[in-house]
Length: 211
Length: 211
Image (cartoon, helix red, strand yellow):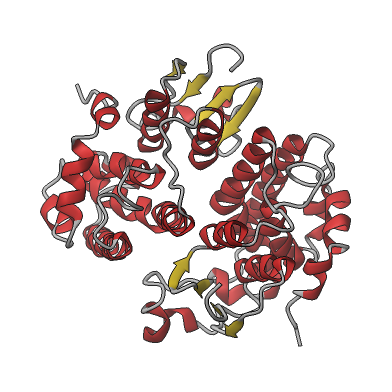
């Protein structure tokens, strides 16, 4: 690696935490520029130059700038393969990739809809009871499928934590702080998974400081 | 491979076409169940059992069911690595993964917003002039970034077509049919890329029948 990478994004972002977990696992030192999502900082001109759709994380590494969490994590996996965060087995890898796709496309919106209602309503456009109920239902639908696909394994895609768990864990962290945690966590298999996640070393050390 | 895979989704879906291109490249024969997105079929109970969020494509293969285009394509790449649709080089792979993330998160909505306004307005919630203008601007923003990252290479992530091109090509196919094609295609580099895409063998053979 050429020089220290620079991570743009604040610790409160679930996607930034995903990248921070990977960096911690791989033992990669980095500098961080804390772009605060809740304060609208990603939409400032300075950050729009880095990511034209105003999102975090962005990682400058090895002379290139990579946007989007999935691309960043896979690059880190490529340059620092240990410990592996992508399963060896093609089927488990399919489950990991499917879980990431499902979380990105439906899970994030649903779970952040639940968490945001209670914790950061301005970020989700204000408190709306119907939206909250739909978010709970969608969260349960997503988790039911992920747990079925998990099929008794220790983690979402096999017996070791993978990028899929790293996408879900930081979002569940916020859901777990809300009165709706019981409803969301009631899906078969979620409680076991969540206990394993909380006990995961780099999950614990990357918890955002909630003040 | 155990038996013939079954692909759920109709030829009009851009994401289904992405998977069909990969299957064609790899020479994998399959059966197809044409779930029609424009007719709302993915939201019918029969398909919700396959994909609880009512989306296509879904692929049944080797005794497992895989949802989400990215996961399906990567599994096909794993079991049938030739011809390669993922670059060997880690940086090019990062560019491919970044492009897929950007297309999924911002490009699809913007480009389908442009195409849908003219071609399938019901699918995008009706014709709205402000939404159309925003979709054109966002499409240009996305394509500007993708073309900068392309950095003079023949394709989005290097000198061979990759999954990133397979995500973008089927969406651009619809944009190219509209009066807004010139505005979207005016971004530096897009015309060259689009010519290469149209000349690509499995892109040509997977064109949807527009009647």
